[in-house]
Image 1 (cartoon, rainbow, N blue to C red):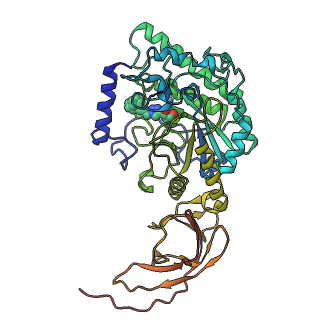
Image 2: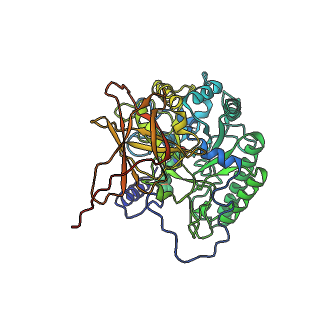
Image 3: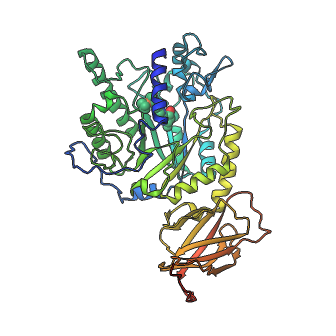
Length: 502
Ligand code: H79
């Protein structure tokens, strides 16, 4: 990358950090007050209620897999780390600055000649994913480097040209579908090495011709993926931020319609396209562009109000950043199983799905760390299934952790205890006006009953009533644990206490 580009990215990063440029999804979104005419706005109605979308809402946990040529360098080359020179491991092709190897782009673009993952076993991946508790997988068919993991008719830069030759996407789609895990295909629109790709709005006749070819190519590939892998439930689009694509709102509008006509149940997030005013994710009137909000990448909404009732998922890396394989993670903070449980339940408590990313190495192996995490997380999700899947947000906050409530049985409430209190008492505050209050409590994983009692602490003008759940001192848990709380009609006789007149 040229030096000037580095400087521009640095400036952008500083402006972001200072809050001068605001990422639209981190702040509370105010709906625009003036209605603007939008012709290329949302195609599907928000909060679709068909079976596919209902299934999406119940997934709870997903698995992301980033696999491609970037797995070969694994964030380094000839012993030199790309950490100071590339934004993330799957971005290693854009390695620039003083540490970048000579002719790096050329080296990278020839890596396909050695892509031959000898241990790749999609069935094993899928089996482990199921063990982890994932209900959907998002798999990279093609990242920004343009390399296709399926033998696309429309490109020479595909798995068919590698020594491996076999269709990887097909193996993943088949293996995961066989395990009952829904498959979504990650697809980067932006392609770094495609000569037809133009970043800015095409101006010259040549740029226009090239970019039109690129648009046709993109359409062909998407239709090809739909034809080849009819089982897929949706697409996860990326690399849609360049002005050329933003300017193609008419084309992308029609393309979305076409994809949906081919499969009316198809699920597409808000990162695919924008309206004619350049508004991305949400159109100029604040309507979600797609079936779910797709902006929560390595970030989490601070509270459910920010979400505004839309569907959403949060996609997250295990290292700080880096979606593709990283050979050497020394000195990086790797999220622990406990971190993941926290993020998963935080998402669920706000009606979102949580998607954890894995970056297999060039041979198709997950790392030891990833494998251990799969096993440990799997134990937790298995023991606490009822709190994770087919649940809704519950409109109370708890400093102890996260509430979720069963979708169909409004008397089954779950509290995932992340912060175990020193005094062994979980004091739940319910508004006095609550129709349903806690009547009994038990541990979700082993069904042991816990003592629950009403605690009238006598705060002046208190709007809450309190319920104490006693955690036995000898109760040993190494991780967060879930309490199942049965709700019912209140039968508490409140003492009439005097409110102070101060
Ligand atoms: O695949 C993973 C990442 O490689 C990919 N998305 C996840 C799932 C990703 N690519 N880019 N990004 C995430 C963020 C990129 C931001 C930037 Fe830009 C692109 C900074 C500069 C160019 C977009 C345009 C934001 C600012 C300007």
